[in-house]
Length: 340
Length: 300
Picture 1 (cartoon, each protein chain N blue to C red):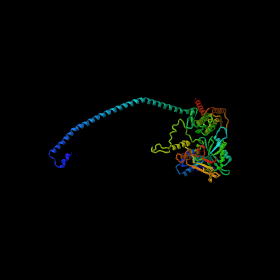
Picture 2: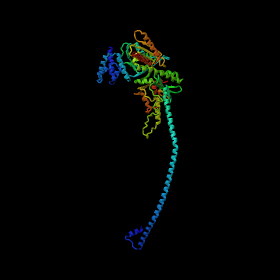
Picture 3: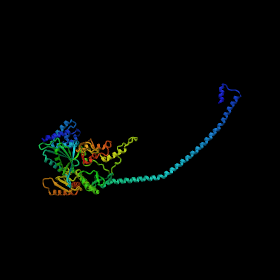
Picture 4: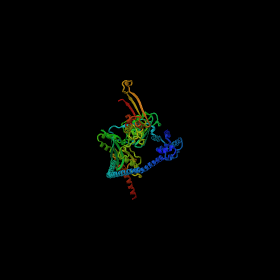
């Protein structure tokens, strides 16, 4: 029964893999040998290729564990297909030095989940920079784990941050939080108001790795000679009447956003719950006791770069509102704004 | 003229004395004019001659003036030239001095801590090294306000930067930087040892090296002789002090089921001691050299 399930999970995962990535992913998986892969015709139609590969997997007696590993690898290659949340853990004051043991973490994590929920499948894959990718297929007391809607967790050892793919099954979140906290020897876990498809950008934001330009005596590029966006080769008969203002805007934008590429987010959401404020006396809304509620959402393929280009493009005043510019610094793209 | 007209008007040449006299008159006036012409020509000639003389004189005068001016300019430039050459050498001297200072500033990074003033404070570069090998550099960009603050940095997230800055940044920047330097150098050193073990001594390892971000817990199974018949030992190294590159706890265990022979037990204890006292890769270097010695003994 499990073998059939493994086969099905494997087949569905292989079907998802684009033809261009097939060889790379199979080699990373390292379950089928070089010889076996050479016997397969990779130029045939995808359906037949998948059939051949599934047959080979059956030959090798692929288990659910192997299929889960392939699933993790596929997700690692296509991490943008998931939306990731960020959790922050904290220790108590005066804690001992963290002697993180990866094997201990894995066994502790699995034990906690299995103790609470018998029907759960947990798989691990070590990744670069001392990180681990965890795949969790949730079940219930009476139902077997659902292998087709797993949750993923990425954890970097000896850091307080964990990244989880937004799972449909929100009820399992507290248990997941508990397992992470205890296994990594922390005390508390809190969900951050930060969410994006771009896992690497989330990592850059919380690990504060997005601004990596530093002034040194060894740097060859002088900081002063930065093109201010004004075309130097333009016709000398053309004068910018607002040259001073343009330069000011460029300077302010550069001070706030820096010279580095911005981390990639798709949106920022502001939930406002404020009372009506008006300069004019009277009016119906001025006397309203209840706060007004509204939701403002900014969306973009690359939100922070878009915000950075607003003032230079003349669409907004510089400096931009700190509510917009604080996003990477505060590690938030969900805001709740209330009256103080 | 009038005479000519009267002649043509009448239509016939006038004969008679009057006409003759008139003719004679015109002749005389013509002759007179002819006589006068050379005189006026002469006058004109002499006038032109004087004019030529005058112009020549003016020309010579101007030529003389130009020559004088040129001579003066030449004299003045020859006076200026020695000053200019002095300036050039002074310029070159300053340029060389500036390059020298720049090179010294660039070389400062080899001292371990160096910095560059920025518009808002200072950007400190902490260079790490272990056993004479230059390793990674890390940066801290400080804003020198009344309470100094960190603007941005490249310190890895698992280094307890917040702890260290909470303790020292506001009160004693020097202490802050030295402590950070300690932690980073120790981390770099531990990482170096672990990397060397994985890359240079993979033949001695029976399984993968287990490590963590801080490289303060290393766990591995190894053989002292890679091709030897000996059974592998399991080593577990803990570095509880994050400012050191040598472990604080070492346990070497034997994986086999049967009891250890006394020689093996001695070996185990000796290995434990080695891991305590020597950097990890040096321990394995000594294993490798011992192996060579064994070969030598077999040959002889």
